Length: 128
Figure (cartoon, rainbow, N blue to C red):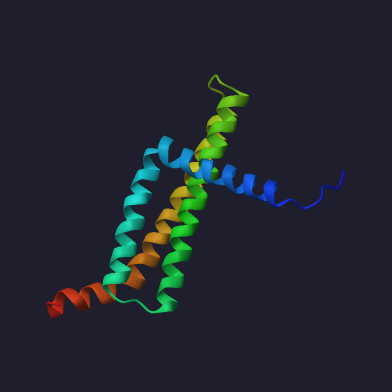
């Protein structure tokens, strides 16, 4: 069945997406850490007066971590709804999803060090 484009339906879908982001932030303790780090990195980038090119790297890294954390939350919720009791395959799926978040975090941390490290060192060593 083909559905016609509807502004109201698109607006609803954005609402669902924002609700999913809010669920992630409210229910996942690691998301609170991501929120703090996002704010700290954003402040550090502003403080260092980064170029647009450097901001692109930071925005990509931040986006990757948040996307992976949100997908991880979805996998956890779906898994718990499908099989409420402990099941080895569900545990493996959750572990793999958590591993994906960790990979994104570690890669993003490296990007942050490469992009922010030199200008922060320069700022602090010059005393400005």
